[in-house]
Image (cartoon, rainbow, N blue to C red; front, side, top):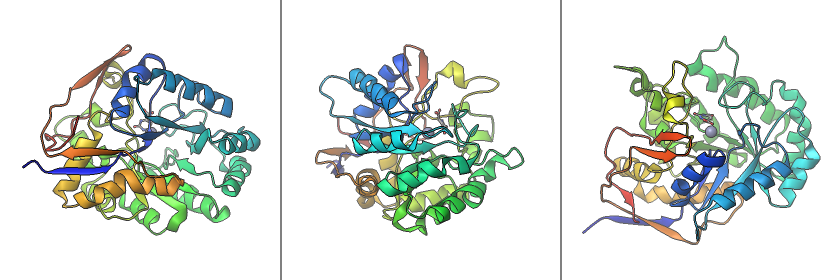
Length: 345
Ligand code: DOR
Ligand code: ZN
């Protein structure tokens, strides 16, 4: 008999949906399996104000397939000019679930992010008062710091001092990629959570760089050594409620990735749950998949766990190598193995 696993419908606590033709192409890939997603605000121009988030939410809702119950959870892009009153209003009306901190220059469309962290203290204090989480891209941008060390340096230089200054602030350290990140989140109590992507559970830097460079495995924070990947696997499958799924599914067209200077991002929305079930099965942790994918995230954000369920079944299913978008093809993440699981259609 086919092995199956029924879990509350998962949520994606870190997702890039983009806009326009790209949004219309990628949104159904997430909406097919996920109930909700924290939607990243790094559009061009970025989603900075409550009004901009409301308009973006409308565009997402209009692009949803008929009958879809998927709900976007909106975020604001933190700038040095962000008005704390606008943030408070957007949070109090329920429009916005988090604010996103991009250190300026750290990643795709982060130019409008924060250079001087002192300049955002007022906003962060307001967020601490109202319980609105800060989602953090945790990498320093100092060119003197090696790209493989930027997460650890961020914790030391930026995140830890900031959390000591504003202890009431709820923080999500997003897409953690190192054992240092895992240990920091695990030791931080209820005020800090960490999201983990599917691709960081599967890839180490050899996959990216050994035997040829693989642009479709290039993302930020960049994949690290095997010991770090193993630490992420252990954290994700541990049952520790500090860790939850944030795919960071980040579509770029193939022409944009396959360049002398290609974009960062892995597009995983299509097969994220199949690959994740495979990983948890491999680690003998299927009983902890519901926690990681469906329960820990809502608990951190103070939202209910989904009442609906999905069923995973141990049946290998082919996944399209790419999806077509109005802007060009977007390659779907290839985990390097055929996932033994699929989401029951
Ligand atoms: O790989 C990434 N892609 N990391 C990010 O932080 C941003 C994202 C994107 O927007 O493409
Ligand atoms: Zn991201």
